[in-house]
Every structure is written in structure tokens, then in C-alpha cells.
Length: 429
Image 1: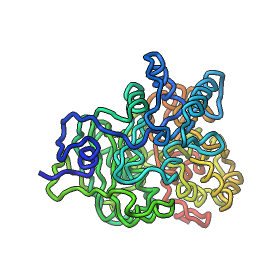
Image 2 (image 1 turned 60 degrees about the vertical axis):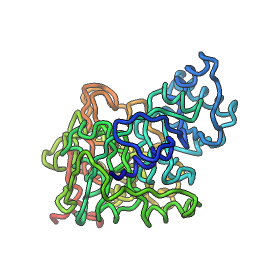
Image 3 (image 1 turned 45 degrees about the horizontal axis):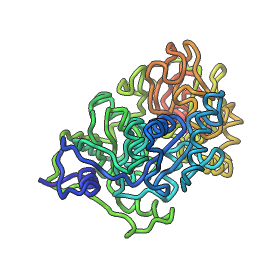
Image 4 (image 1 turned 180 degrees about the horizontal axis):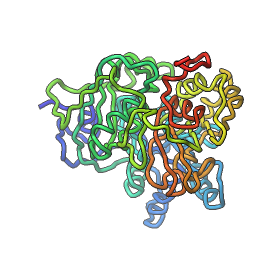
């Protein structure tokens, strides 16, 4: 029996010629990603046990992003802990506030991580990097401590779900809509502890930004990670960041690899999709109900990239955010912020009445810079809409693509982005 991409990567990193789902392995990790929320707990575990060391300072990437700039004294202390550890241990890759942004998006652009490698972090959306053809997953603080200390982690080899997406995507439909459609079909635990492997001619035509959106949300279906095989699009993306072919290993799934589940999606039939509260699998077609919104949020590691901001600007240009709606746009990194400014996107956002914030995870998980109050209704391009995720537990969170968020901000209610033309007119005009 053949192996899947993820099985091959894990076999290579555990000294096995062949692995099968359910097998327990001890796996070397090529990279450990650290931020200021989960890393301090892992460091305390090591310090309390006299194991205060780093397996390789050149293989750890530290990026504060959740509660920075600090919104209170507690957050400031957590940031201080990460920063002092970075300097004490000589961590070579540190993207401080003002030089980084949201960790997963910063990391994908550094030119550090490569196909065929392994990556762990104390953050569930580490699966984002799977779009580069690597095995990337979130772990708890205990496993994170072990990875920092020894560069090794224990895994149970996961089953793999094959998601085959074919056909042309309709205008106004985005990769975010595709992943929300998949999660709607399989459920929020439909890929429990599985690898979600994306294939098909639709995936072949996606740019890297779209692929990152797909793999980022694997955890929202209960997945261990998401993954996309390396192709010319991946190679070109890597080459632009100084990574040349031959410096990494490309793995492909064998024709006789075993899959736990196979899902087929006709992309031409996918419509702009909104996940209603309080679970990402509660998907409906955008505009099915004209639900009034009080907040519109564009950002996060899922959809805060330059292409996402361009989608938002296309709809906001020449229009205004509706009265009573607070719209926040958060570029995912400093580099994206700068590029958006150079392209004139910031002016469009401001002219429309949106607030542009600094790169951080803040509002996505209800920490700062856009926390929801009682009974607020937010349409968000982020990845989770659980009770209390963005603030008060009575607030309602609807997940959607950046285009749908922008259209809804203008309309004042959840709207179909296909109704808005780039010239500032409505499609029905």
C-alpha cells in the first residue's frame, strides 16, 4: 500500500520507511513557531524542571502577534517573557512588533519554511503552512515545551481526507467560500484528527494566498492539518523568497495511497457562503437572510493578505460603510500594510469610513482592537465564530470571505458580494 504526502513526510522524520494511520511515532521537527500567548507556559514547564534549553536557536521562529502592542499589564508581561527568552537563548529568527505581524502569514513569507519539512507551534492555525507541501500542526504547551527542548514530538499518524475540487470558480466566489462549503458538508468534526489533502484542477489554478486560506481552516473541521502538493505555483512562490528547487524535498501521494474519506466539490456550483453562529459548519448562501450587522471585520491569518484587501477595496471604492456599522480592516503583516498603502487601498478604506488597524490577531480572538460587546453582530473574514470568540458571549459572529464582509458593511446587512460591481454600481442597476 502506498503512502500519502503527509505519511511520507512523517516517515522521513521518524526514521521509518513506511508508516500507517494510527501508528505512534517520535518525529523530528524542522521548525518551532513561538508567540507570546502559549510559549511562556511552555517555558515555565522547562524552567521548573531544570530543562531550560533550546534544541537549536536557528530552528525557532518567534513572532509576537496575539496581544501586541500590549493592551494591559498582563499582556505586556507575556510579551516581555517571550522577548527576554529570545535574547537569552539567541533565537535567530525574531520578528518583533513593527517588523512582523500575524505569525502564520509572516512565516509563510520568510523564506525559512520549505516543502517536505515539519513545523509545530502552540497555535491551532499552524496548519496554514501546509499549503507549502509541509506537515505543519498545532500542539499543546507540553508538546511545545518538548519541541523547544529536544526538537522532537510524538504523533499518531493521522488518516487522510482527500478533497478533490474541480471546475471553474464563479465570479465573486473565493477560496474562503470553498472551504466553508466543505466544512458545511462534512461538519465541524468531519475531519477529526485527519489531514485534509486538497487536489483537483481548481486547486491547481489557485494562487498561494487561496491555498493558505484552505489549509488554514483545517482545524475548523477538526483536522490535524491541511496540505497541498508542490507544483509550479509553489515553486515560483518559493523562488521569489530565495528558495530554489533542490533545496527542499517534494512529496506526492502514491496512486494507491489509502484515504479515509474522499470528498468531491464542483467549484462551479459553490456560491458565496456565510457560516452562521455559532459553528463554522453552519454555512448558508450569502444574502439568504438580510441580517443587520453592527461590525464588519477583515483580517486574521485566514484572510488578511494583500489579495483579500484588494477584494475589499474593489467593493468599497466609491461607496460608504453603512451608518451604524463599525468596519475594521487589519492587514496581516507590516509588509502587507505597506503594500496596501502603496497601492492606494488604505485611502479607499478610510474614504469609505473603515478603520485600518495595525497587524495583530487582536479582534479575531476577542483580545483587543475590536472586541465585541453584548448583542453585537459581526461579519468577519476570520476563522471561528464560537460563543464568546470575539468578545461578549451574546455577540453573534458570521464568517465569510473578505468580499462578502465588504458588501455587508456597505449594505448594513449580510449581502451577496456578486451584487456589487467594481465601478461602484450595483449589479442590478
